[in-house]
Image 1 (cartoon, rainbow, N blue to C red):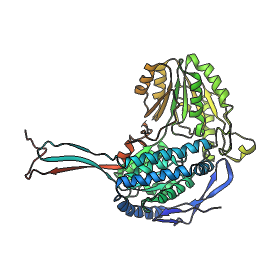
Image 2: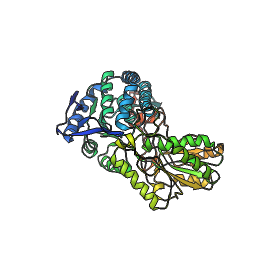
Image 3: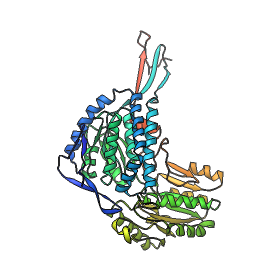
Length: 494
């Protein structure tokens, strides 16, 4: 058994509490990956104090040079892609094809960050006064607390840390306790590439202990959180009271709409991938399928047949389509929602139980599950499950489909399958989501585009793309008056 450590103040160290938690393979719970420090607020305090020193040094490095460091991070990730994919599948469960994609997302994010080192644009505008220069530019903010989830063990930490570091900030990682190993390796790679040793800190532990201490720390002006809406609301209250800059990326209840004129083969591939890829454990996962009357029955029949053939197992084995859910609590939550669906009279078309037999008995596996006859307003249609459960809703036309899509408290991703170009552009405009795909599933964000949602999915900020660089930097405005005399702006000079 391996004991892992925090990375604080330029050193790999144990927690001051002396306590540990275990990290086990969700596909085989007898496989103990290692023990990780169950850290305390004292560890957070030491990490933040060191990160403040790291910030002072790292922000003095020119932004293009910081970009060069992150480009080297991309090179290292590329060289270690298979190794990283394997360790991610072992601790998170999704198949290797998906964890390779997780690493590639980090690689893409690194190379994109490298280019942004020469693109932290400000603006120069005409002054209203003679012989005066008016301009803006971007400045780093300080220590950034990054609280990351289990479902993308590498990609999401890179979405947060690479832009933060490129802008000149220092970072303190608090990874999900279900996937601590991946971020530990990411920190090693950042250091190898040349990030200042105190510009990055890693504190393992539980959310209510380490996460809460990081969020409420007075010397951490920036918090980025990905996780549940309930936890995000608590974080929002703390950060609002303390005037922190906060990015929240939270829940989703994403719908794929299939209209009568859709390419049904394409739509079938899309919903299988969107609903059961990552075992439904994506904030963008397809948890609702909205089918128009004309194709409802035959499409549902094809979907049930295809879903029942998906192969479950250890994602490191060839031919596996669906891995385990992350832990026992998640498995119990999925079972609870199956009971809720049955009690509401929803029709269980396939699945609905733990997947057992052979090696499946070793892990947290649940059958891909489809409920038909779900009505708008049913709990299965309204609440985020975060597991392999798909609710099917019948509608009469596109107008009703759009209303059903918009009738939830979340607004992350949506998808429309149609051959009608007019409806496609209506969907882009009318579906109340941060992301809409046409003739593609609800999952599949690209690293160079903004990512995030509306309503209770987020608080208006975006991960990824160019917008995230505005989040991790502040606008500084400068005026240079070379007239040699007092000139008064904001005075009636007319």
